[in-house]
Image 1: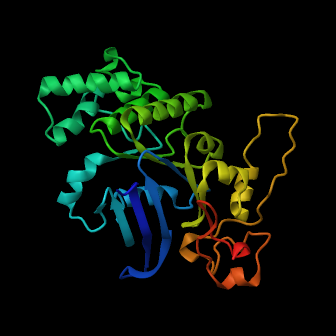
Image 2: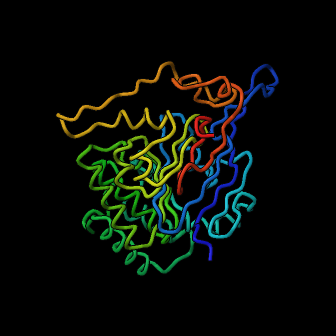
Image 3: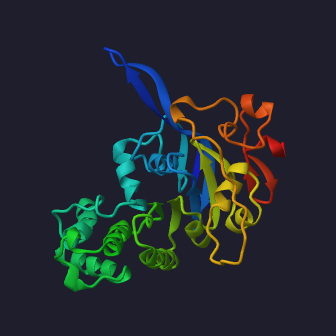
Length: 322
C-alpha cells in the first residue's frame, strides 16, 4: 500500500513574458522550476522560503488553481495533471485550500450560513435540513457558535474569519489541505490559536497538510518535514528536527539564523546575505543561490546541483556535499 497521499514529479510552472505589438513571447518567469517531493498520509509538510520563492505557486499548481507548465502530480494514486475539468471536479472535494487573507477569500455579500452551505449545494449533498445540521457541526469544530450564522464576514475579527475559511475547507471531509500562510495575516496571540486548531482538526479528521509559510518558528512547531525553496527550486528537504538541528544548505543556515530566540542571554550569530534575490525571469546559471552564497565556487556558477541524500531522509542541493 502506497504510504504517500501526494507525489510531485519534476513540476514546472512558467509564466510567459510578452512584449511588442504582437505580444510575442520573449521570455518566462520560472516561478516553479523542476521540483519533486512527496507527502505522506497524515503528515504536515512545510514549504518555506523568502517571499517570491515560489511556495504559493507550488501549492496552487498542485491543486491546478494555476495550470503547471510541465511535470506530474499524483494524488491518492491518480494523476491529476492530465485530468479533464470534469474529472478534476469529482476529486476536488478531497483537496482543499486555506488562503492567507481570510477577508479576501470570503464573499462579503454572503452570510456564514451561505458560505458553509455552498460546498454541499455544489456537490449535491443532503437536503436543506441535513445541510444545516452539517453547517452547525462545522461551526462547532472550529470554535464558532450558531448565533453567528447570519453574520457577514466584515462582522468578524481576523481570527474568526480564518476559522470560517477553515470550516469551509473541512466541509467535504478532504484528505489534503493546502494551507497558504494561514496565520501570517493574524496577530501573534491569534496565530497560536489557529495553529492549535489546525493540529486538533488533523487528529480528528486524519488530515494531511501542505503548510506554506515564511515564519520558520511556526513551521518548527507544526510540520513533520520541511522543504526549503529558493527561486523556484527546492534546496533542502528534511525532517523538521533534523533540519533545525543541522541545516546543510547555506541558504537554510541563513534563514534559521534569523529566527528569534526567546532568551535575552543567548547569543546567536546572524548570517547576513549580501545582494538581492535574482529575478525568476532571469535566474542565474548553475546554483540559483551562488550570487549570494559566501561559500560559492566556480562549479556553483555553471552546474546546477541536484537534490542528493546526505543522511536518513535528509536531502540537499549543494555542491559542497557532492
